[in-house]
Length: 417
Image (spheres, rainbow, N blue to C red):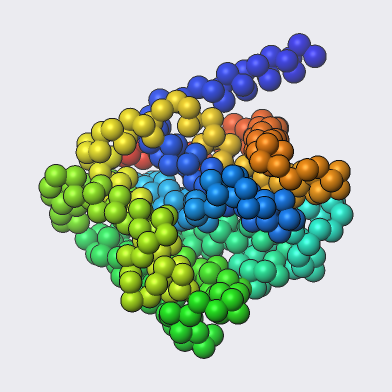
């Protein structure tokens, strides 16, 4: 018993400690990302169960577009994994076996534990819309079925990341060893191809870019929104940051530093882009802020803006923003972000279901209380998963390194999601 208590105490101390060498502003971005996603799902699940209403909670949370939190996650993922892969390839220490083993150990235990929980729970249309599709989740192909017909509808982004990183290391290995100077420019081409693929998919589905019809939006959500090629543009934005960080002597990095040095121009442009995306105004007036093409392009715009801000912070600009995102407050939530992403929809649905069954009055106070309780319960559940599933595996991940024991990346990185 004493050993168990000591282990728990050590785990909690380690959880609240900020390890040296971490890019703390990336932790801040990650924490804000999961907050955005949770706000989006509060609105989604509460509204579907008739809880949100039209009171103060709806007016306060309504303008916040939480689905853009996933685009910030994509950018972060590109920064972290890109830096790790590019740095190891540059040093000649990259191991495919080590990379894929470590990715599996980082993501699979908590992911499959969540799938098991969903399989054991009674069927619920808001959680497991199509119970027969769970095999797609086990194979990280959950974005292949229509979005509204997936078994675990919020796992599509995890599948996209795994599919991308299944192919990325091999491509990176060939390019870094043969045409290193081409790497950032080919990433730019890939990102542009992803945006172009968005419009190809719109044409395949017979949708006009300016379409705002409910049936058009549903088709977009089902067959385009979770496309790997299209959404990989967001990951590519993060890869460009990694290129500038690791290949500091490249022409691309020199150009990037020069642009950043011009009166914080990237931060200013990024702020305008983010304002135009999160607020109900249109940067692309020919499309309209409610059109499906604007929605599609805006996701890439968010990733590009976050990548530009990350570059500015990395190269010594945007000090106030970097200081804010580096606050210790964000670190625990950043560590919990993966478990939070997996578990919070389950907690939200269960608590709102209880709220409806008990027929509580739908007042502002009761709804805000439900929001607070849902968030707190999600954080508590994520903490348990982190301590008893994620953390033990993270402690073992060092044994997954190959025998060559590669040196740390040139750019110190926090643990990738």
